[in-house]
Structure formats: C-alpha cells, structure tokens
Amino acid sequence: ELSAVIAHEVRNPLAVIKNSVSGLRRRVVSDADKATLLDILEEETDRLNRLVHDLLAYAQPVVPKGRDLIVRDLTRRVVERARSGIPHADSVHIEWKLDGPETVHGDPELLRHALVNVVENALQAMPGGGTLTVRSQAADLEGKPAVAISFSDTGEGMDTIVRAKARNPFFTTRPSGTGLGLAIVDRVIRNHGGRVEIDSQHGIGTTIRLVLPRERTSLVPIPVGESGEGRLSGIREVGP
Image 1 (spheres, rainbow, N blue to C red):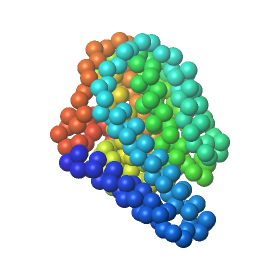
Image 2 (cartoon, rainbow, N blue to C red; image 1 turned 90 degrees about the vertical axis):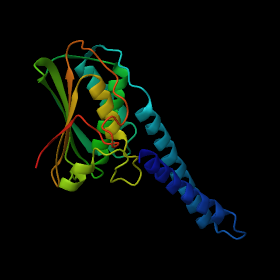
Image 3 (cartoon, one colour; image 1 turned 60 degrees about the vertical axis):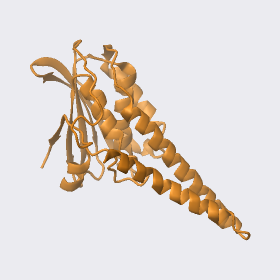
C-alpha cells in the first residue's frame, strides 16, 4: 500500500512536467506561455525534490545519539531556521513561554529536524499572519521526569476529519506538501522515548506538544510502518 502511494505521489508531478515539456516543444509558443510553463516545471521539480528529501528522512534508520540540550537554545535556533524558509514569517509574532526545565536529553540534529518540521507547519498555517506560541513545561513519561515543548499557532486549525487523517503518511491539505512531516516528527520523538500530542480545533488553531525525557534513557530504533498499515502509532490526539 505504501509503495502504491509513493508511486502516485511521484507520477503526478512527472505527468505535469511531461505536459509542460510538450508545450515548450510546440513551434509557436508566446513568451508569456513559455514563462508559465517554465514556472510549472520549476514548481514540480521542487515538489519532487521535497518528496525525495522527506522520503529519505522518513525511511532512514533513526538512532539518536543523546546528550543534554538547553531547551531555550534548541527552540530559538529551530524557530529562526524555520522562519528563514517561510516568505511571510515576518508577519507572525513569536511568543515565548519557556517555563519548564532548562535541559532535555536527546540527539541535537534529529530533534532540530523534527522541531523545524513542526514550526514550518505552524508558520504555513498562518499565511495572513498570526501568533506562534512556544512553550516548555515540566511533564512526566511513565513516572519519569520529562519536558513538554509545544508550538501553538492561530491558524485555521483542523476539523475532526482532517485531524483523524493527519497522522497518515502522505496526507496533506497543502498543494506543495508531501504529507511526511508529522510522520518524521513522530518517528524521531518515539525513538527518543517520547510522545507527540495534537490539539487542534477548526477556526482556532493547532498545538503540537512534544514530550521528551529529561534524563538518559534506553533508546531503541523503531522501524518504519511498524503499525502494519503505514499509519503512525504513539500519537495521542487531544481535543474534540
């Protein structure tokens, strides 16, 4: 089933690229039409590039190399990195509420990659501007000390149907999305012994809460698609 979905995701942009090339090969093509077709080619090749990038990130083994990380530094660098790739990011106000423990235990590069995915999704959910609230709070994981890092946007939010499908790999409501961002986030956080919580209401916004251990823990790589149906497991949904 997963391979069929991948084939579908690849064939769509390839078909568009082929049609655009056919259009450019016509003997008479106006400058305006040529510019449009070239824009389409660029958009679709970018889409394929994003898909390949996300597929590699999703499929590769996740083996965290943990160390103590400063939550404040981690979150600020992640937000700066995500903002640099979003054209309208300057119209989004960032509100900081880092009241939790100062450190978290994890792999710096893997966590940065996962958190950037979360922040990019939040920023893209607010094309007209809004507020992104970044919080850290004390939490627990099966009785052990943990840190909850959450990102709350004031975007459109998800209705019940979209929220139920949000954890399916390749499901996306954005034309340029690959639908693998949350799948990657889930794998990284679970491989750190943590969990992902989603709280989203249509018309209000979305909060993604990542709960991570504060102390060194036994980290066991989790294979892709272990739930048996290509769906994510270990995600707790919060909300109506």
